[in-house]
Image 1 (spheres, rainbow, N blue to C red):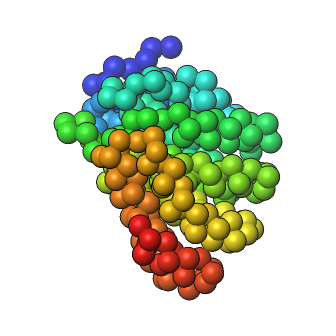
Image 2 (image 1 turned 120 degrees about the vertical axis):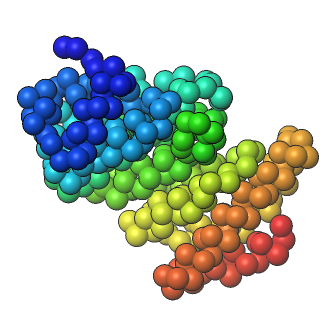
Length: 276
Protein backbone atom coordinates (compact mmCIF):
# COMPACT_ATOMS: atom_id res chain seq x y z
CA UNK A 1 0.00 0.00 0.00
CA UNK A 2 1.40 3.37 -0.99
CA UNK A 3 1.57 6.03 1.71
CA UNK A 4 0.80 9.46 0.29
CA UNK A 5 3.35 12.23 0.66
CA UNK A 6 2.37 15.25 2.74
CA UNK A 7 1.61 17.31 -0.38
CA UNK A 8 -0.42 14.50 -1.96
CA UNK A 9 -2.36 14.02 1.27
CA UNK A 10 -3.06 17.75 1.54
CA UNK A 11 -4.56 17.76 -1.93
CA UNK A 12 -6.72 14.69 -1.23
CA UNK A 13 -7.96 15.94 2.14
CA UNK A 14 -8.78 19.38 0.76
CA UNK A 15 -10.93 17.76 -1.92
CA UNK A 16 -12.61 15.62 0.74
CA UNK A 17 -13.14 18.66 2.97
CA UNK A 18 -14.82 20.39 0.04
CA UNK A 19 -17.33 17.54 -0.07
CA UNK A 20 -15.99 15.18 -2.74
CA UNK A 21 -15.46 11.74 -1.18
CA UNK A 22 -15.15 9.84 -4.46
CA UNK A 23 -11.42 9.21 -4.19
CA UNK A 24 -11.71 8.36 -0.50
CA UNK A 25 -14.38 5.70 -1.12
CA UNK A 26 -12.00 3.90 -3.50
CA UNK A 27 -8.80 4.37 -1.44
CA UNK A 28 -9.90 4.39 2.20
CA UNK A 29 -7.09 2.21 3.54
CA UNK A 30 -4.30 4.21 1.88
CA UNK A 31 -5.77 7.55 2.95
CA UNK A 32 -6.34 6.51 6.57
CA UNK A 33 -2.85 5.03 6.77
CA UNK A 34 -1.40 8.24 5.32
CA UNK A 35 -3.36 10.37 7.80
CA UNK A 36 -1.93 8.34 10.70
CA UNK A 37 1.55 8.47 9.17
CA UNK A 38 1.45 12.27 9.01
CA UNK A 39 -0.61 12.91 12.16
CA UNK A 40 2.30 14.82 13.69
CA UNK A 41 3.36 16.79 10.63
CA UNK A 42 4.99 20.13 11.50
CA UNK A 43 2.78 21.60 8.77
CA UNK A 44 -0.01 23.10 10.88
CA UNK A 45 -2.47 23.28 8.02
CA UNK A 46 -2.08 19.57 7.21
CA UNK A 47 -1.95 18.40 10.83
CA UNK A 48 -4.70 20.52 12.37
CA UNK A 49 -7.02 21.86 9.71
CA UNK A 50 -6.98 18.80 7.45
CA UNK A 51 -5.94 15.55 9.20
CA UNK A 52 -7.55 16.20 12.59
CA UNK A 53 -10.60 17.87 11.05
CA UNK A 54 -11.08 14.94 8.67
CA UNK A 55 -10.70 12.36 11.45
CA UNK A 56 -13.38 14.29 13.38
CA UNK A 57 -15.62 14.21 10.33
CA UNK A 58 -15.11 10.50 9.62
CA UNK A 59 -15.29 9.28 13.24
CA UNK A 60 -17.83 11.59 14.88
CA UNK A 61 -19.98 13.19 12.20
CA UNK A 62 -20.23 10.65 9.38
CA UNK A 63 -19.29 7.56 11.42
CA UNK A 64 -17.58 6.23 8.31
CA UNK A 65 -14.76 4.32 10.07
CA UNK A 66 -15.92 0.92 11.32
CA UNK A 67 -15.38 -0.50 14.80
CA UNK A 68 -12.57 -2.90 13.84
CA UNK A 69 -10.64 -0.15 12.13
CA UNK A 70 -11.02 2.23 15.08
CA UNK A 71 -9.83 -0.48 17.45
CA UNK A 72 -6.83 -1.04 15.19
CA UNK A 73 -6.10 2.70 15.05
CA UNK A 74 -6.32 2.96 18.84
CA UNK A 75 -3.79 0.14 19.17
CA UNK A 76 -1.47 1.88 16.70
CA UNK A 77 -1.79 5.10 18.70
CA UNK A 78 -0.73 3.37 21.91
CA UNK A 79 2.03 1.28 20.33
CA UNK A 80 3.86 3.77 18.12
CA UNK A 81 2.48 7.31 18.33
CA UNK A 82 1.58 8.37 21.87
CA UNK A 83 5.11 8.05 23.25
CA UNK A 84 6.99 9.06 20.09
CA UNK A 85 10.03 11.08 21.17
CA UNK A 86 8.63 11.35 24.71
CA UNK A 87 12.06 12.19 26.17
CA UNK A 88 12.39 15.25 23.89
CA UNK A 89 11.24 18.72 24.98
CA UNK A 90 11.81 20.99 21.99
CA UNK A 91 11.38 18.74 18.96
CA UNK A 92 8.62 18.32 16.40
CA UNK A 93 7.82 14.92 17.95
CA UNK A 94 5.47 16.76 20.32
CA UNK A 95 3.03 17.28 17.45
CA UNK A 96 2.70 13.50 16.99
CA UNK A 97 2.08 12.96 20.69
CA UNK A 98 -0.32 15.89 21.11
CA UNK A 99 -2.46 15.11 18.09
CA UNK A 100 -2.49 11.41 18.93
CA UNK A 101 -4.22 12.26 22.22
CA UNK A 102 -6.81 14.28 20.28
CA UNK A 103 -7.25 11.37 17.87
CA UNK A 104 -7.70 8.97 20.78
CA UNK A 105 -10.27 11.35 22.27
CA UNK A 106 -12.36 11.00 19.11
CA UNK A 107 -12.28 7.19 19.29
CA UNK A 108 -13.10 7.22 23.00
CA UNK A 109 -16.00 9.61 22.37
CA UNK A 110 -17.38 7.30 19.69
CA UNK A 111 -17.05 4.38 22.09
CA UNK A 112 -19.25 6.18 24.63
CA UNK A 113 -21.91 6.37 21.92
CA UNK A 114 -21.59 2.85 20.49
CA UNK A 115 -19.62 0.73 23.00
CA UNK A 116 -17.32 -1.16 20.62
CA UNK A 117 -14.04 -1.26 22.54
CA UNK A 118 -13.43 -4.30 24.70
CA UNK A 119 -12.76 -3.72 28.40
CA UNK A 120 -9.13 -4.66 27.80
CA UNK A 121 -8.75 -2.21 24.91
CA UNK A 122 -10.28 0.54 27.00
CA UNK A 123 -8.08 -0.32 29.98
CA UNK A 124 -4.96 -0.10 27.81
CA UNK A 125 -6.09 3.30 26.52
CA UNK A 126 -6.68 4.56 30.06
CA UNK A 127 -3.33 3.30 31.32
CA UNK A 128 -1.58 4.73 28.25
CA UNK A 129 -3.04 8.21 28.65
CA UNK A 130 -2.29 8.32 32.37
CA UNK A 131 1.31 7.22 31.75
CA UNK A 132 1.65 9.70 28.90
CA UNK A 133 0.66 12.64 31.11
CA UNK A 134 3.13 11.50 33.75
CA UNK A 135 5.93 11.52 31.17
CA UNK A 136 5.16 14.50 28.89
CA UNK A 137 7.60 17.37 29.45
CA UNK A 138 7.05 19.48 26.32
CA UNK A 139 4.43 21.98 27.45
CA UNK A 140 4.63 24.38 24.51
CA UNK A 141 1.33 25.84 23.38
CA UNK A 142 1.59 27.69 20.09
CA UNK A 143 4.81 27.07 18.15
CA UNK A 144 5.78 29.85 15.77
CA UNK A 145 5.54 28.77 12.14
CA UNK A 146 4.12 25.34 13.00
CA UNK A 147 0.89 26.03 14.86
CA UNK A 148 -0.48 24.46 18.02
CA UNK A 149 1.27 21.67 19.90
CA UNK A 150 -0.76 22.19 23.12
CA UNK A 151 0.12 18.73 24.41
CA UNK A 152 -1.22 19.25 27.94
CA UNK A 153 -4.55 20.77 26.87
CA UNK A 154 -5.11 18.10 24.22
CA UNK A 155 -4.39 15.36 26.75
CA UNK A 156 -6.96 16.97 29.06
CA UNK A 157 -9.58 16.51 26.35
CA UNK A 158 -8.68 12.82 26.02
CA UNK A 159 -8.82 12.32 29.80
CA UNK A 160 -12.25 13.95 29.83
CA UNK A 161 -13.44 11.36 27.31
CA UNK A 162 -11.94 8.59 29.43
CA UNK A 163 -13.87 9.69 32.50
CA UNK A 164 -17.10 10.04 30.52
CA UNK A 165 -16.90 6.38 29.54
CA UNK A 166 -18.90 3.94 31.73
CA UNK A 167 -16.09 1.40 31.26
CA UNK A 168 -13.76 3.46 33.45
CA UNK A 169 -13.33 1.73 36.80
CA UNK A 170 -14.12 4.21 39.63
CA UNK A 171 -11.09 2.76 41.41
CA UNK A 172 -9.00 4.80 38.96
CA UNK A 173 -10.64 8.11 39.92
CA UNK A 174 -8.06 9.00 42.62
CA UNK A 175 -5.13 8.26 40.27
CA UNK A 176 -6.64 10.40 37.51
CA UNK A 177 -7.33 13.20 40.00
CA UNK A 178 -3.69 13.21 41.09
CA UNK A 179 -2.50 13.17 37.47
CA UNK A 180 -4.62 16.29 36.85
CA UNK A 181 -3.18 18.02 39.92
CA UNK A 182 0.33 17.03 38.80
CA UNK A 183 -0.23 19.01 35.60
CA UNK A 184 -1.24 22.11 37.53
CA UNK A 185 1.86 21.80 39.74
CA UNK A 186 4.26 21.88 36.79
CA UNK A 187 7.30 24.13 37.03
CA UNK A 188 6.78 25.48 33.49
CA UNK A 189 4.31 28.29 32.90
CA UNK A 190 1.04 26.96 31.47
CA UNK A 191 -0.10 30.01 29.55
CA UNK A 192 -2.51 28.66 26.94
CA UNK A 193 -5.69 27.89 28.94
CA UNK A 194 -4.50 24.49 30.11
CA UNK A 195 -6.05 25.29 33.49
CA UNK A 196 -9.51 25.62 31.97
CA UNK A 197 -9.14 22.46 29.92
CA UNK A 198 -8.31 20.42 33.02
CA UNK A 199 -11.34 21.72 34.87
CA UNK A 200 -13.54 19.71 32.48
CA UNK A 201 -12.22 16.27 33.51
CA UNK A 202 -12.11 17.38 37.14
CA UNK A 203 -15.81 18.25 37.12
CA UNK A 204 -16.48 15.07 35.14
CA UNK A 205 -14.95 13.06 38.01
CA UNK A 206 -17.46 14.70 40.34
CA UNK A 207 -20.30 13.88 37.94
CA UNK A 208 -19.17 10.24 37.94
CA UNK A 209 -19.40 10.14 41.71
CA UNK A 210 -16.01 11.13 43.12
CA UNK A 211 -16.51 12.72 46.54
CA UNK A 212 -16.08 16.51 46.37
CA UNK A 213 -14.38 16.26 49.76
CA UNK A 214 -11.31 14.93 47.87
CA UNK A 215 -10.95 18.24 46.02
CA UNK A 216 -11.85 20.28 49.09
CA UNK A 217 -9.08 18.63 51.14
CA UNK A 218 -6.50 18.93 48.39
CA UNK A 219 -7.25 22.62 47.82
CA UNK A 220 -6.72 23.25 51.52
CA UNK A 221 -3.39 21.42 51.39
CA UNK A 222 -2.03 23.32 48.37
CA UNK A 223 -0.09 25.91 50.41
CA UNK A 224 1.68 23.03 52.17
CA UNK A 225 2.43 21.32 48.84
CA UNK A 226 3.85 24.58 47.49
CA UNK A 227 6.12 24.89 50.50
CA UNK A 228 7.42 21.41 49.70
CA UNK A 229 8.01 22.47 46.08
CA UNK A 230 9.99 25.46 47.27
CA UNK A 231 12.52 23.16 48.90
CA UNK A 232 13.70 21.63 45.63
CA UNK A 233 12.98 24.27 42.97
CA UNK A 234 14.91 27.41 42.14
CA UNK A 235 13.14 30.71 42.74
CA UNK A 236 11.98 31.24 39.16
CA UNK A 237 10.50 27.77 38.72
CA UNK A 238 8.82 27.90 42.10
CA UNK A 239 6.94 31.04 41.10
CA UNK A 240 5.92 29.35 37.86
CA UNK A 241 4.22 26.68 39.97
CA UNK A 242 2.51 29.33 42.12
CA UNK A 243 1.28 31.06 38.95
CA UNK A 244 -0.18 27.80 37.59
CA UNK A 245 -1.89 26.93 40.86
CA UNK A 246 -3.41 30.40 41.31
CA UNK A 247 -4.63 30.50 37.72
CA UNK A 248 -6.21 27.06 38.06
CA UNK A 249 -7.93 27.90 41.34
CA UNK A 250 -9.37 31.13 39.96
CA UNK A 251 -10.69 29.34 36.87
CA UNK A 252 -12.14 26.53 38.98
CA UNK A 253 -13.86 29.04 41.26
CA UNK A 254 -15.50 30.77 38.29
CA UNK A 255 -16.71 27.46 36.81
CA UNK A 256 -18.13 26.27 40.11
CA UNK A 257 -19.84 29.61 40.59
CA UNK A 258 -21.39 29.38 37.12
CA UNK A 259 -22.72 25.89 37.77
CA UNK A 260 -23.73 26.65 41.38
CA UNK A 261 -22.65 23.22 42.59
CA UNK A 262 -20.18 21.77 45.07
CA UNK A 263 -20.51 24.68 47.50
CA UNK A 264 -17.98 23.12 49.86
CA UNK A 265 -15.11 23.70 47.44
CA UNK A 266 -15.52 27.43 46.75
CA UNK A 267 -14.81 28.72 50.29
CA UNK A 268 -11.69 26.55 50.44
CA UNK A 269 -10.52 28.01 47.11
CA UNK A 270 -10.89 31.58 48.42
CA UNK A 271 -9.15 30.72 51.68
CA UNK A 272 -6.25 29.08 49.81
CA UNK A 273 -5.86 31.97 47.35
CA UNK A 274 -5.49 34.38 50.27
CA UNK A 275 -2.55 32.32 51.53
CA UNK A 276 -0.71 32.24 48.22
